[in-house]
Length: 261
Image (cartoon, rainbow, N blue to C red; front, top):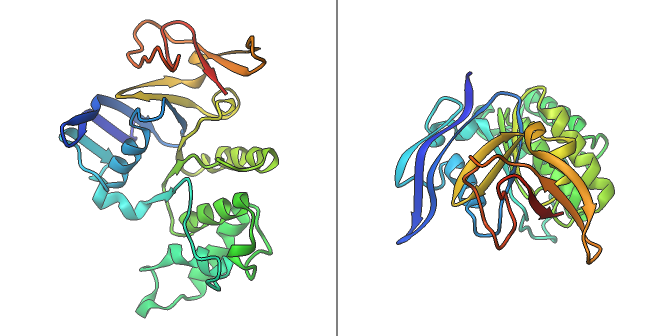
């Protein structure tokens, strides 16, 4: 299998505190990977390692066949929240064109850049938004614009940190449908607490809690049920070989882990 992401015995520490220990997994092309795990378990640290923003203490990280720093121009990243000055007069088209920085001649955007940006907006279903003020968009629309920016830059791997946080259900459904569509041409990895993505969209589930275990989504998806307090729970099945366990969070426990959705 030609791997888009390949980690081998990766360990990472902040100071003397180890956050990730002996993490190994491989992800192939055109996968949609949902990354789940408790807060503080290492999910965001993992994304930073893939981006080359952090380097492992031990082990190796390969992205698109290269070291993460060398592959950075082929990787799109959309953070959970995007700080920006609401008074800065930037349009949607200008934001998407930023994904083409470094590709044009003499620092100017040419016809090819504008065509790529317009095509990317079409892929995220925001045709006609080119001249709209970025600050006037909803949270879900802004997230889609940032994804379009990554697509315009020719990303082959898209990393998303909580892409549907604080987004209304209608936009959430559109976003997940978009991620599924994008896997026809690229690999998508998203950190998510909305575990409906596990059963309805993801091809794989990566459970992260200091170490990591990668599963086919079909192998771990269980059923839904209502808890005693009325909450919606999602049951995820794992075999006893799943080493990612956290009793307090009830995450990835052997055989039946129940995760609040």
